[in-house]
Amino acid sequence: MNKILIGVIIIGVIGVVAIAALAASDDPTINPPSSGNNGEYNYSVSTVTSFNYTLSGTPLVMTASAGNEYKIATITLMNTNYSGGIDTGPVWFKFNVNGVKYAWDTATLFHPDYKDTVTLAKGSKYTFTVVFQVPIGTTGEIVWDGLPPNVVYNSALV
Image 1 (cartoon, helix red, strand yellow):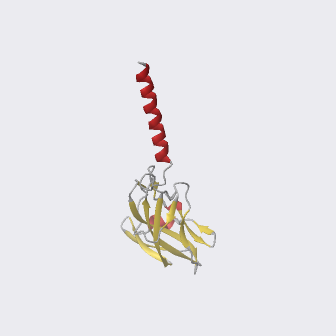
Image 2 (cartoon, rainbow, N blue to C red; image 1 turned 120 degrees about the horizontal axis):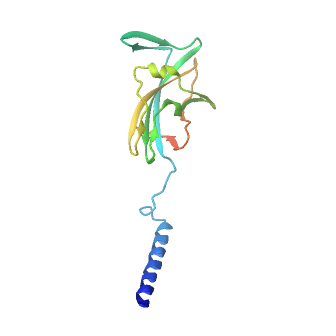
Image 3 (cartoon, rainbow, N blue to C red; image 1 turned 180 degrees about the horizontal axis):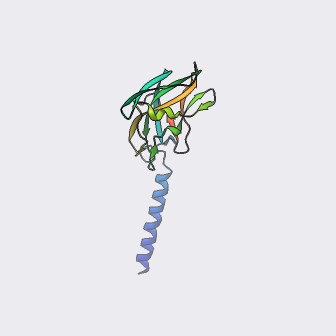
């Protein structure tokens, strides 16, 4: 009986040592490198002072305030590895102009390419539109301004 107990203990110790050795391995097939990013996005931006939309069958025009224009951002967002899901809501994106971040405009909800917010499962991708209202002639970039998960710009994402 003591020999069996000693054998079980030895097998357990060997198992723990083997697991520790694998965890410390530099072999990328055992421990793939992690970028620390949970998602990626890419975008294109067009500039308009107004756009047409339809509400309850009535054609209407959404016009930017005097001295402003709309930046219409078409954003593609991909959840690369976040099991909790990544929300596509416009609130997570800003139009950044030298550190000044413009939030999404409610005109987003009326834009003809508007899509409802969804939660992207791991491996999923979604393209949607966000409208920003900024001073005429403003140039900038679309940035993720959300809480974790960490989402980064990737110009190669299509």
